[in-house]
Image 1 (tube, rainbow, N blue to C red):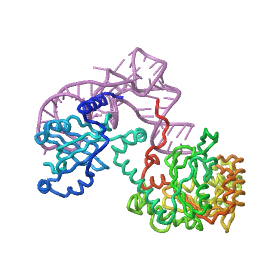
Image 2 (spheres, protein in one colour):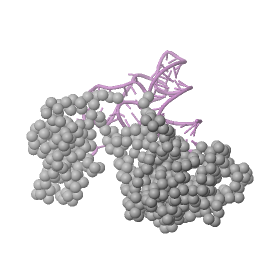
Image 3 (cartoon, rainbow, N blue to C red):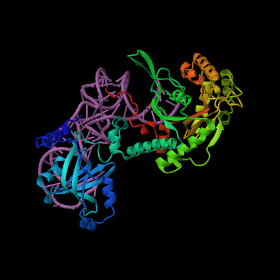
Image 4 (cartoon, rainbow, N blue to C red):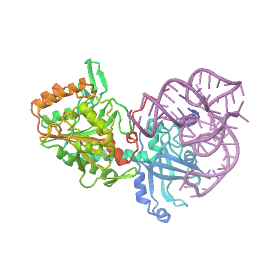
Length: 493
RNA sequence: GGGCCGCUAGCUCAAUGGCAGAGCAGUGGGCUUUUAACCCAUUGGUUGAGGGUUCGAGUCCCUCGCGGCCCA
């Protein structure tokens, strides 16, 4: 790395110190946000500004710098809004002009006082009378035309990406607005936001492999949560009838355009509700998020447009798989029978160890990619859903839905299983599946069963993949684009 | 995990196997209306790492690292 420019800047830093100026002062001093300055004066012409003689103080980061010898222009950016500063040698103290002309580098933070005016070219500007360094930058920012293009650098040094690529800044803001909207939506419906353990003695609530860690003082093996489901249900059992958490979960698996090992999931639970109520809830929630983030219920997704208005389609998993493949998963109810049925249709069945995994594979491969517009897939096989209540019409399937959009699963919801006898039986079945080779089978959780035996109300539960919702609302090609600091391999070499 | 592509100055990018370059940024000089300012001059390189082939490798071969795209 070139030390040249850094050394120049270090020399300027030292020069400031020698002149008795702190290059990193503790206080900024009074200032008016640039957005307010612009709002107040953008519409005024030069004559009006001249007559009003408005004195302002602004702060910001130096984005560009142009010197004409006796006249200097530079641009300050603060909170994403830019304003030009001019400095005229004939008008101000020579030392102050020298500071503006020679001491300021691109990337520095400065405070400027002066009059608001318009230049000959009509650019609203602050004509500098006083200036102070607020923070000296030692390293240069990316090039001004093309910004930071290198994908890897954009992820590893996201601060540079945010500074030089407007789109990255927009996505960060869009993500924040999305999460605020979700929180507001639930708060308005009397859900209580809670926090539950990230470090769990036993993982559960989803089908996934966990990260394993260790607490030294207690000599205890712990897992980073794959879900907060079982803790939120304990809270419902404890009388907190409506709870939610916007949680970071961790799954020890590969990375793709739709998977990240660390991701954000909103889970909420509502006593005395069921999966149908959760459909209404998630529909409203995603719409609220879309309105807040994009201002519209028609969301651009690549060459498609996702229509979030109207009633979203509802199809059972059985129907969806029949439609896509001709295979009836409720006719072929063993892994052997299902594999044979697939073979008959000329469809590869892979090496799925169990019927449940094979159903999941068939769905993921043949149905999911085609689910572009918002669609609820309902009534999953019971074996795939150990925490969901069985359907009263057919105990082979459960009261569950997953919401799909843009070929991705966005949400998952159940009428939560609250029968502790059945729950124990389901965990036992999971053990059988684990022994059959399913690495993602749900572990037995005695502590959770004890909680349920004390009495759990009928409950609707919902989980929403926040990163994926943001990705859709941002029309982003990759999940990493909507995660500020995505997981990468270590970069030292 | 597999296939393909990429990694060259702080940034964006060039360079038939034959002297490693440009623009921006930086430095010095000029310039009182620019906003991708302009003009003159100029600094800056372990070409991702390590081997190999060759008179000669950024370029060809091998191994590895990191990233991207596609597939599983």
